[in-house]
Image (cartoon, rainbow, N blue to C red; front, side, top):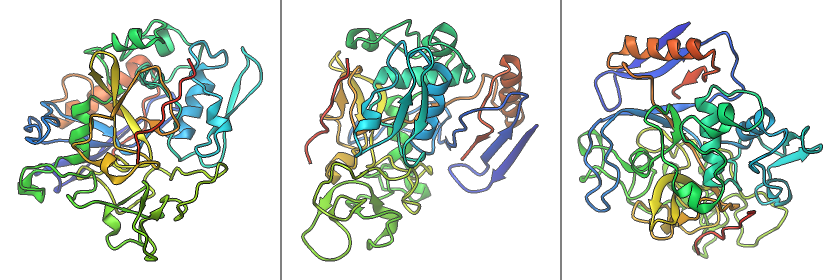
Length: 376
């Protein structure tokens, strides 16, 4: 079954707002994505990033604890490439995921809310999750048909040098975003369609004004559409910018979870309709920086507003094998080739799904730098 829903708003006169299709197989993980149009846009003149010459879709939300738990249960009964980090359970500031059993029969379960973003994932973990999606969410040991090939040819890569050498396959359908793909989805809005005069905003909340730190959904702030989960304090008893966004206090508690559910700031979408590209957690991208690092962008619950800026890149990098309580990721998607017209676009998705007997998602539409802690 395929259905299309259209809207006359957006970056073009006719926009597909949702595509729904189904196959015989059921999917464990369903990902909401939003369309990124305005193909061939120019990069941001201030930074040089954001230009993308093709249409794609990007995760509306960061990959969640619940989605990553499904991934682990599918491929990590024997966790060959350490996709699970014990800090996912023991660090209560972000928990998380619990692991039970012994190697060969591991099982995983959600601690707290399944809708918080996953953290303590390396760039390699994010690439393996992407491969799993690209391969149709198979169940089995970590290997060529599950995690090691697909969008990225990993073949056991776990070291920094090996992960730096990895690149996206031309045939990839699900993948970690490039820096330009991520940047465009966060900050780009043509001036003719209500954007800033240079087509790019400074923050991913459709504004050049510093956001407010407030408890979600942000209605305690002067502008709910410009709120996010980050650290800010103005020393005033005004109900916002009062420390950690989730608690509204400057004190820290080792048993307090400081993440917010993805999309919890319901009024604060980016121009294209993504959420949390500023704050909550940093997000991996594909950029290779100085030959030794992979890019991260967006800032986190532990950072000041400056880390949410489009211009913030110098500290937005880390070694690809590193893991942190403040770094997660989101994925992006492109349809099968031959999708120039909408009918062929839907058909290509359907045929690919049935050809692979894959479980494609049923709905497509929809302070100081962080301290990076390595498990390797």
